[in-house]
Image (cartoon, helix red, strand yellow):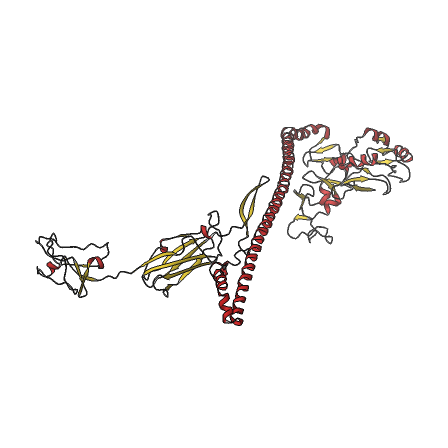
Length: 579
């Protein structure tokens, strides 16, 4: 009985007996048993005839059916060749029309099977009587014989000349040399070779089926065909085999080196991951400690602020209750007798007492603390880490304002400036969310204000825009968290918008009046100054240059901007210009 242990076939006389490994050259790779009628495929791989018969066709002519009902034949009964895949090398091989029986028999495999039966444990039975233990083997009949059948084999005239070998001798020799018998004429050895059919034949085949063919003894032609096989093997295939083995060895070495490198790299990655995880964990603990420090620091600040507020509340509440009770319950004399100390205390509380702005009562509610996961945080244990706690708060005294719109503006035109919030170190904050109040009030007209718009840019900057409707001097109040920034309130000068108009320019009243000594302007009044040279060839005349506009005359210095120069004709007479 045959078994399989660890993927290798084994043989034993009984399942309970000790298993012994089987020669792999005597075992079919499909059924995993000793060969039964082994056949050689065109790819030189050997399988049992029954195993080849059960292979699924890879391709077959139309009309071929490989099923149990027709035995793989055409509907007309004619067998055709089919193509199958070799189970061992996946090569497409053709099965002849005769089926697996038309393939060459692997006699070497049969020799291996017989040798396996010889070396296996357990007695060998007689192939003739089936009762005695085999002692010899007929090299011609290929049967094992017991002692009695061996004597009978020698007494028979037909088998008397057969060569008998002792089983023990065959076991000791370890190699089997037996004749190859004809499948058509049992007992006839294949001693001839038909060169016409390229087949080994026996004497009877040569005399009948191959009578007109050229048949030669195998010993005469073996050198020719053996040399061809030997030449192909030694000249072409053996060097290729060596190259393939060397290449395969290189591939195997490369695979081993690759696996070694992969394992080493994997260990490096794991070590890096463990180190990085340790660094990240240490960084996490550091961030948590920093967060706890901020909590204690801010909590202590809030406790101090709370204590100050409570004390201020007690002071104001006690004083207010005393004053209200004095006014409601005290007599005139009692009020007057205590008014001095009462007014002094109330005045002190009103003028210098703690009176926080509502926006600054609890400025630190933790909103300034945030975690920035993508911000670089340096290195921890040699590994770069990210993630920082941002706890910077705005320092009102360090805030700055950018833009010319804070000092100058124009009537009816939109102006703007930018508030930059900074921390105690002067660095710009990277977030927004601060309470920013901007108020613009006319210095002379207290009820004249300018509406402002504050836009949070979310990067520490706040854009302020406004549009004045009246010219004049304004005060600009800029407060962050209820406190003025440095320089607040600022002075804003809003200029009047100039209007374009046309008119006539007179170089002087003397020229305008035709040289009259006492000339009057278009405006109500005379020009002072007496006779003075104007540089236009006149000996003298009073007056200053004027601009006649809309039926009246006003001084150039009050009407024209400094950027506009009045043009005067070479003769000093009239010239028209437009603003």
